[in-house]
Length: 540
Ligand code: C2O
Ligand code: CU
Ligand code: CU
Image (cartoon, rainbow, N blue to C red):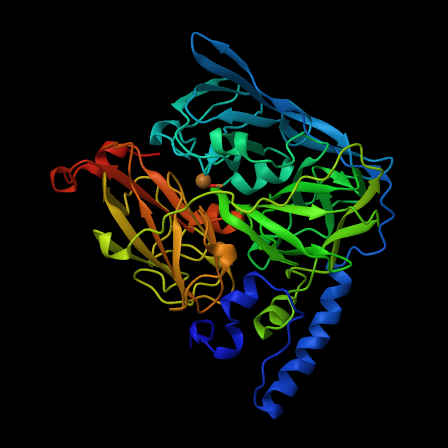
C-alpha cells in the first residue's frame, strides 16, 4: 500500500497562502471528527517536536559574522579568484572547539562577487584529505565548468572553472558536489555566497554597502556533540540539527542603522525548510529570488526557503525597535504538523536579533520597479518531460521513502522517474536552443526541493493554479510538497556538450547523496547522439 502517494486536499495548501502570507494561516474547514483526531495527535507530536526543534531563549550575545568578500584580481582580462578548501576549527559554542572545513576560512567561504559580461577563472585548491568538487549553484556555465560529481578535485590538487558570466544580477552560491559526500562536506562548513551584479543592479537605488545595509544571511542547522564536534546524524533520511547558525555564528545579533536594510537569505542547510519572518510579524518586501530581481517588490511577512533556495528582502527598521528574525512553524497544514514528528519541521527557531542604531543617512526608497521579466509562452516549448519524485523504484516496489536498503546494503534515497542516480547513465537529452517544460510531481510523503543545473526557470503553475507573486521570478530550485505537481519552463540557450552532463536533483543533500539525482546532456542534435553515450561517460 502506498500511503504516501495519496494526495488529499487537506495536505495541499493554496500556493498563494503557502508561499506568501500576509495573514495568520488557519486550518481549512474539514470534517470535524476525523480532523479532531488527527489534530490532537498532530498537536501531541507538535509539542514533542517543538521541544526538540525549538531554540527559543537565545540571548543573542555574539556579533553576526560577515564573511569576507572575494573580488579576485584581473589578469589578462580574466578575473581570477582563488578558493582553497581546507579543514579548520572554530569556536561556535562557548569554550568548545569544533573541527570544521571551509573555503579560505575555517567555516563557510568568502562572498564571491562577479559581474555580468566578465570572464572569470575560479581556481579551487583542495586541501582536504578527501576528493571534492565545487559547484556554482545557479550559474549558467558549460557542463565541464559546473563542478558536478564529474569534475573531481583529488586531495592536494586544484581545478579551474573558466567561463563568462552571462546572467543577470542574482544571489547565487557555491558548494561541493562529490556524489555521496555533498551533505557531509557542506555540513562541515564548505559553501559560500556568489553574488552577481549587472547594469540593472548598479542602477537600482537599493542598499548595497556589504555588511552595513546589504547583509548576507546564511541559515544552517547543526547538531553538536558534548565535546563541540558537529554531529552528522541521519534522521528520517536526512540530517537535521537542533542548533541554529547564521553565517556560522551561534546566538547572533546584528546592529544595523534604523532604516531600510537588505537581507540576502540563503538556506544553506542540508535538509531543513524554513518559514522565515520576524517575531513582531512585521511586513517586509521580497525583491529577488534564486535567479534575480522580481519585477516589483512583493509585500510579505513570511518567506519559505527550502535547502538551496535564496531570497532577498528589504526590511524597514526605522522604528528603531529590536526584533528577532526567526523560522515559524508552517501552521495551517496537516502535512506540516506531521512533519514535526521527529523534529524535522520548519520549527520555532530564533535566528538573529536585529539591533537598530541611529541612522547616518536617509532610508533608501522602496523601488517601484526592479526588473522586467517576460513570461515564457508555454506554447513555445518543444518538449515536455515528467519528473516524478519519489515514485516507485524501477524494477521494484516501494513508495519512495528514504532509508530503504539498496542491493549492496547501502541506503537508497527516493528516486526520480523510478531511477536512482548512476554517474555512468544519461537520463535525459535536451536539444540546444529548445524551450522545455518539466512537470515535477511529488508522489512521496515529504517535500522535495527540485533543482536544475545550468538554467534559471519560470514556474508555470502549481497544481494547475498560477504561481503566487513570490514565485513569478527566475528560480533554479523549487519546493514541491507531497502530492503537488509543479510545471516549470526553461530555455536551454547555451553550452552543448556531447559527453559531460548536468544534474537535476532534490536539494535535500542526503536525498541527493543517496541517489535522488539524474543527469542530462545538452546537445546540438539529439538524433545524432550515438548510443554509446554511456560508454563516453565511462565508469566513475
Ligand atoms: Cu546546489 Cu546540484 O546543487
Ligand atoms: Cu546547482
Ligand atoms: Cu528530497
